[in-house]
Image (cartoon, rainbow, N blue to C red):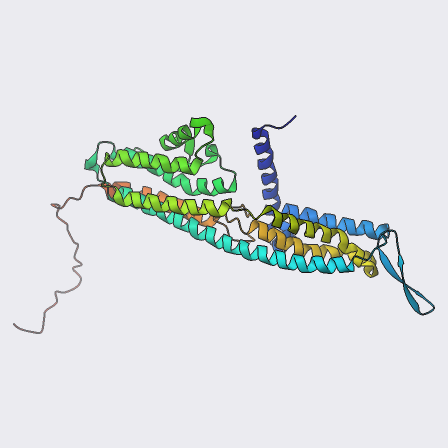
Length: 376
């Protein structure tokens, strides 16, 4: 019986959770995975372990292929149970893997940098959007000015994390948090769906069988609606609209980068070459006997490590609890803090200026009055 989409998503999240727990072991300075980052990837660790076990089986059952035999000073070759010499094939595979893995890693590093740049631009424009909707709005424009701003910031504060988890494939609005303002006081780490802004976004996503806009797009859509209410349909919010457009443009660029997948033909050739190499390499190490186990494991560490790096480094939104490459997690946390701080300035910025007020400047009387030596 085929599994439902919900069961498949649940299994995917469970596997991601297991991988995350394994990667967390790399945080400790005494952990081997801290000093050997590829081992922090559970899949890589499993493949390297299989490589060592396979080599041991080849050694134990003496499946070494062609071996050299010396008889009366004459060296001849005799076939064992396998009966072939994989040296030429291994040489070709080594060259192919060196080229393919180098090219993959180079592209992954470029993609990682582009994702980070676009994410920083995205969060920067969200901050600018927050500045605009507060700075260009005064209390006299409407009786619900602060209420509208509060709803917008309930969405804005949650958006950096929602965007990150959306590209990671683990977005769940029920786990998202934001900040709220109640009776002049601010409260952080509030469940997103317990706020007016969060409920509005969830309502948008529930329309059309939930197969249209994703969580980030629903947030952008609702922000425009709140902005319209805040400006009462006027174009006094032009600066905010431009910030909204820039933020959405950066989000679109991230979507393009994240959606790109290497051609299936390229991936197939790379994986085939890697698996063939893993299978055949033990047959070339007969002279090493039992030492071939750790030697093939070491070789697999470098090749599998490069493959893992190429697959994971390119996704700057991936979970990287071992800290082996740069992701958007730190910029996301900083952006959330900054937007929350902007939210807390709403009272000071939206208040109408009182130009008729008298400002008193304290004077320190311990200093004597200065007398000029010049007489005019």
